[in-house]
Length: 590
Image (cartoon, rainbow, N blue to C red; front, side):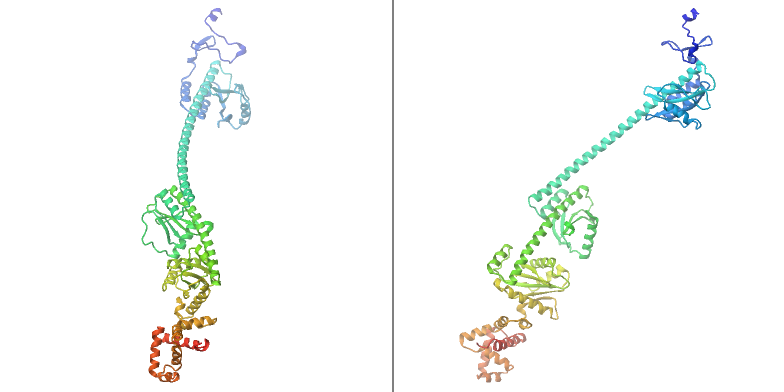
């Protein structure tokens, strides 16, 4: 016995049956079995070595557990009943657990705290839950039962398999975590790169947006108008910039390539385009242009567009166009309000002039609008078929008058627009301009005689109405009629007063009347008798008690002094009516 102790043989104590014997460091492991000592390496089968290699070759934890459970029976009278892996702090059973005793084993294993303990497996004997410990902590459990009492060598082999499995799981977990860490690091790097790109893009966007805001804010601060806004947009984008009015006519162009002449818009197609762009709500590409409708509070005031034939505009260009359109909307809206206020004040002045006002006030107020009442004025009345005399039509008439070279003050009545204009319209220039403006020739214009002082404007207004009415009742009802050209029609119709009759007589007989007064002659009386006698020389001379040669002399003097031709039908008619009015209504020579 002493010799045996000297050789370091360890015997198994009866109360520690089945426990593994201690192994001294630096020695080859041995185990006592029935009085003999055998190296542990002889107990490890080639199959276990192959399993060990297979366990460490795989990186899938579930596969490692399944491989270990499949080879439990190879090291002794064991049976693998269940396997568990620790996933996110919870024991997840392997699909190999039999359904008959899964719930009982699950409850037992879930209550374990990392130790090897006996467990009861229904219908089995000698059940034990073996912990799979590794450097990273508890990886799971293998529940094993045995058909018979295992030997110490079999117990050692099972413990070795469990430790190999735990080690392989540690390696797999470490590899998985390393892979996950690498993937997470790669994801973080991608996110960082994407964030950096977004940050750079954001910085660029903010820089460009700041440049746009600063450029347009500077235009607003310096009081720049439409041209300044389009110039700023051209500098920001590099594209030619244009502004059209509500009807598609060019207001301004900044940049190269301006068409000359600018194409005349088609009203129907232009309106359809406006409606389509307005419905879509942002800049819209139409052919070679990127178009934004300028419409503050829903009212379309015009169009702001970039000329981009190659479709090079990007999101920065669109941003600049949108903000420029907003600035232009404010500018055009402001101009509209000013125009409406000025139009209202001008209308009040014209209303006062038409109704009669003091000259001092009229001169001062008109001078504030840049209108010179000291010059010769004409009153013009405009009426257009199927056009209401509203503010829009009044503005159209004002624009046409300006285009025709007639600086004017404008107002409107229920069915016509009234102009107090500096200078008479050139023939039919106003009518032709309005025809283009409205797109229809169905209009009538009446023009008064000249007016030298503001107090004569009410009478000139009535003359313009008379000219308008005569034109409307004529066979050619559309066009321009001048009161000075009415002749006899000036005194026809209701509402004529003594003053108008006298003016008519004065126009046709005034020079003769004055001549008679200075030279004590009777040229007007001679002309009246000549018409009364139907132009018969003998009867006229006899009624006047003068010789026929004297009558011929007087008629020749009448032609020379009055400047009227007695052989002209219209002059003859007007002179005859004038002599009748002079003789009957105005009292003759008196």
